[in-house]
Amino acid sequence: NHPWRQGYIGFVSLILFNLILLVYALAVCKRRGIWPLFRPISPATVLSMIPFAILIAFGINLLVGTTHMAMEKILNQKFEMPDYSALATFGPNSLLSVIMIVIGFTAIPILEEIYFRGFLYNSLKTRLPLLFAANLQAILFAAAHGAGFMIGILYFIAGMALAVVYEMRKELVS
Image 1 (spheres, rainbow, N blue to C red):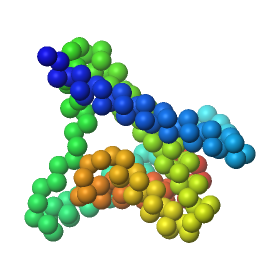
Image 2 (image 1 turned 45 degrees about the horizontal axis):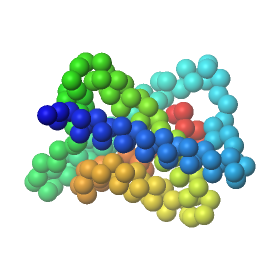
Image 3 (image 1 turned 90 degrees about the vertical axis):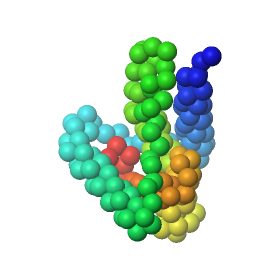
């Protein structure tokens, strides 16, 4: 009777999963004395980072998009990216769709960044060589998106690029 419910149940499950990861990460950081997870940054510094962040986003999208096109050309096969935004059209009303879009394109990526680069990557690189830690967090980042092997390669590349940005800037805000 209500096919849109499945999309929302999956979406709410994703939010809960991300929140559980965040709470776990923050609890571990606090217990181990590496609190706070973030360095204090002034609003002026955050504003000055916006052009750099836009440049980073453009570069990562260019890298992933170029890789995607190269994979399609080399393998002579079409690889479709998951259409997460299509879930918003399943809703019974526009308010739920707007909430889903806002959370899906703001809160979830922020929670993922805090967990995968802020917590997981930092934890791994204290125990493993830097390159191995970066690769492992990128593999887990790709797996968490559950998009299949070929599209997972694109998520892996994005995860590696975000780890490089984190290493260069030593902050999650970028």
